[in-house]
Length: 243
Image (cartoon, rainbow, N blue to C red; front, side):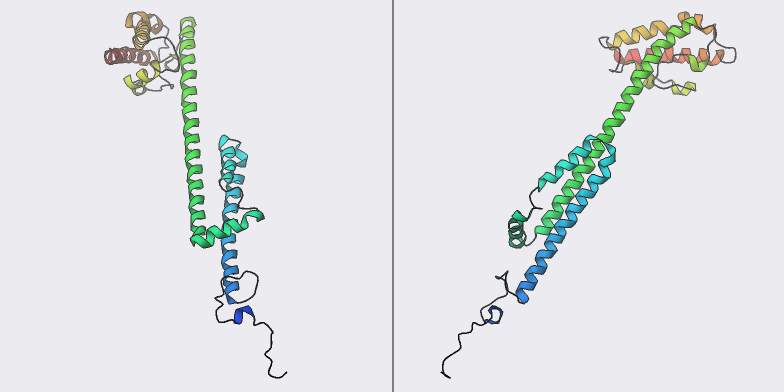
């Protein structure tokens, strides 16, 4: 009996041919390295998921289309957070050796798309504000001519100057501003550029505007007269370019 060899199995990690990589269930240095690498990969993924959630939380109070869009971006990897798909994630990480890097690239792409979407949204809002400003200015312009006919006294600031803003000096009444305002596609639908300029020239003709000039306050009369003359000259310049 003393010569019978013991059949007690040698621990796997003590075998000469064991490389410490293929086992996920037994202890040993290889298993510890594997477990540490896997934990690091999952930590990177968790950090990225937390970042996406944070971005969504930041945008939550804005109630814009971007908010919905950001939430949809989580669908890029919708299943990676579920335990049932961990083996597929592990295969990707350890076979490619750079799964974490790929995930970070995807995160950067999402961040870039969010940034571009926000920029587009800001630009759209700015365009909407400019369009509204022009529409409102045109409405004031038309109403201004009616008020001008019914006023007994007018000031420079009350004259319906053909520009989008409210000019405070003659330098703000330029051919460029007049052309931008009168030829805007946001009003006077159905009228050609020539028709719009012609109508404006009839209104601002020196002989016709002379009747309004007599209503100008004595302190503003000279300024109003100079402004009306500037508009008439600007309209001639715009007409020449349109034709």
